Amino acid sequence: MNLSKATAGSQVRVTRLGGDMRQLSRLASVGVIPGSVLQVRRNDRRRPLLVFSRDTLLALGRRGCDDIQVEEVSA
Image (cartoon, rainbow, N blue to C red):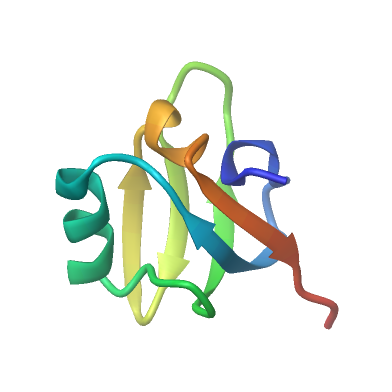
């Protein structure tokens, strides 16, 4: 599934990144790479997705989240 479909409060692992080189570079600079675990904090319609990664709260745009493939991590 893509990141924009993840529910608030869930933990997901990044399996694949897509998008242009600018987006991939930005995501890598904040530690969002394949294998990293993200905590979804907020996923409201028509608003940026808020995720927690490596002690940092990130706001990711909706279009960018469609290019990030994730799988849910069981507790």
